[in-house]
Amino acid sequence: MTADVADIAAFALRVGDDALIAAQRLGEWSARAPEMEEDIALSNIALDQLGVARMMLTYVGELASGDEDSLAFRRDDREFRNCLLVELPNAGPAATSGAEGDFGITMAKLLFLSTFQRLLHDGMVASTDEQLSAVAAKARKESAYHVDHASQWTVRLGDGTDESHRRMQAAVDDIWPYTHELFAVDDLSVRLDQAGVAPAPETIRPTWLDLVDAVLAEATLVRPADGWAPEGGRCGRHTEHLSYLLAEMQVLHRAHPGAQW
Amino acid sequence: MYGNDFGVSESLLDQVDEAERALVAAAQRRTGAGDTTDQGGSASSGVDLQAYFDAVIGADQKIEPRDWMPDSYRKTLIRQIAQHAHSEIIGMQPEGNWITRAPSLKRKAILLAKVQDEAGHGLYLYAAAETLGISRDELVQMLLDGRQKYSSIFNYPTLTWADIGAIGWLVDGAAIVNQVPLCRCSYGPYARAMIRICKEESFHQRQGYEILHTLAHGTPEQKAMAQDAVNRWWYPSLAMFGPPDVASTHSEQSMAWGIKRFSNDDLRQRFVDMCVGQAEVLTLTLPDEALRWNEERGHHDYTQPDYDELMRVIKGDGPCNRQRTAHRRRAQSEGAWVREAAAAYAAKAQARATQDEQTPEDAVAGVST
Image 1: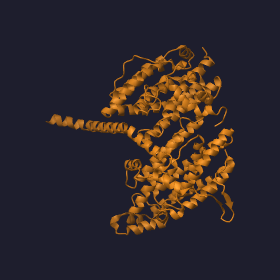
Image 2: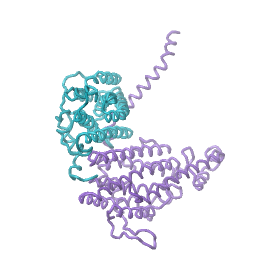
Image 3: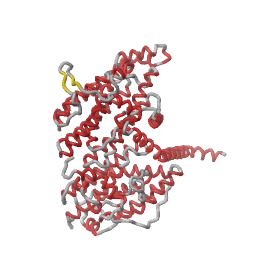
Image 4: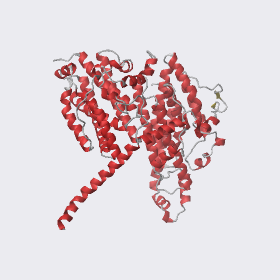
């Protein structure tokens, strides 16, 4: 069964938007990280995510319409297809706009996201779509580094001081509900799986759980119980946070329609 | 991409390469004169340490961390290298201010990488300062307490996207003109740091120039944005070279020590001469009606920056001094729990490793009792 071009574009948009919004949140940390070395590391990861976003959005433009910048800067929040997890503020899901970032929240988000991305990219290497396969082959190596970085910090914070243990556990608890959406099944994911374009998301979860469980255990943290599982990002129903993120990201580009930069 | 627009900067980069070759040559000369080094470097040999230091400086060779050096030389270097490191770290703020709003994904990536480079330069310079017997923590504390300064240029705000271009072109440009001679500094670790940093700074300057070039050849609003940024950054950039020679307090001794090679005014003149041609290609105007070529001097005449303003900004009353310092203090205090956790975890891991090593012996001891 051959994949529909529109389906491939829709999938590339999900992967690209995840990476773009993750990069935007990481970029907010610039000159604010707890250590100078960490400023460099977070920028590195932001640059990797931005790189994947640019390749994916460019591909979406080739398959459908637009280019990386029109897709990034001229869509409204209802048109974005990223998961809710990446748009959550650096200060946490319940934070107000502009609140100071919480490093524990950022590491919890990064651990869950990058472990998912690593497994997704691993699966995408075998994609019937050559372009997706090529991007995944490059991105999987970067994802492995992101997982390593987030895992190390999760362990240090979980098994560090009483204060850091408390904060890291709270961060894991706050972010956990948003991980379920990463593995959600819908018509598109079923068609992509059947056409060999991308692995079925639900098949990724067992391995993801094994990997995440091992890190949480070493960090002396408790895996939260499954329960509330907010979703909607994949069909454009986001949290209130995304619109603020886009307002900031898009303000200059939108103020000068048609300009080159 | 822009052909010969960077003629003068290219020659500055040649100077960096030349300094690197000279540094290698100096190191080889020293190895050849091994006996002298051993006698001079060892306090027990009885050779006059000051005389040896003076001879190394006089021969344009490098002082290395293991060498004896006068206290005042050490203090001057610590002050200068630390100020330079602090400037890189504080300088991340005005530019980081536009990462989340960069107008294209390509520009966002370039800016992220640039600010990341600055953090790297900061760390590299702190490491150079640490070879002089002071720790990075001490230096950072002095920055936070206001006991050490950073470049006053970063106390000006980045109000529009064009400011990112102007900082790259003018501020990084001025920094390069200032720093290229430091590649020949008499203190080896600082000279080596500067060689590496100058090479990366020249990329940054080119990127800033390209931002302005794109804006100046874009829509009328973009061009106006570029001109406004140049108008605001020109004089503060000229002030980066410090007070005029007649009022410069540290210059004379630093010259004698081979830390400084050219006077503030000479470097400022070099910068002005470099910018005039580049501004023409940009089709932007430098905001100085008195700016003109002086055939007799072979240089451009120009209006001096407002040195009273420079002193006010250095003393703490620039537009953003309070904001920049508060930002750095906040990052430091907000991150304290993370650094404490990392230290606590490292101590636990160390204790576990020690325990593992001891276990077999303990077991043996257990059996024998």
